[in-house]
Amino acid sequence: MTSLHMGRMLIAEGRGRMELVRLALDRQLWAVTVREAQECVELFLKGALRLVAVEPARTHDVGAMLRHEAQRFPAWFGAQVDHLASISAEMTGDRGIAFYGDERQGIGPQELFDGDDARRALENAEFVAEVCERLLTEAGA
Image (cartoon, rainbow, N blue to C red; front, side, top):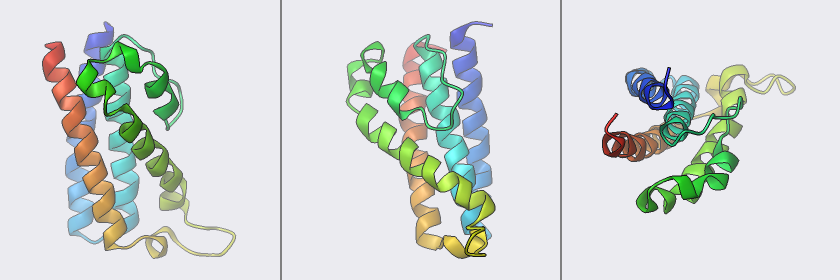
């Protein structure tokens, strides 16, 4: 399987999961929205790395790898790498508590996030999706 094919598949998976993010937001499942949005961001960014023939790290946050490999991307994408990496780091930080909550304090995940958090997570995922979809289009994949 080629790197281009894998990139296309990862981006398609992220695209498909965006529907789950919107559904969770519509149902006011704030923590689920945040968690699913993070997974979308991870899939899109790993797909982008594959499109430029980079094997993504086996980690949820690929921000450092994006920065390290920025020169492989078109200039317009490279100009977004710092912002993309920041989104990746922020959302990865929320990933665990969006799934498990704060066990030490006995606070469930749904209590830790609100509608504003969920909407911001969706906006971040939509931004990452837009940038990665453009990269995919330009790659001719």
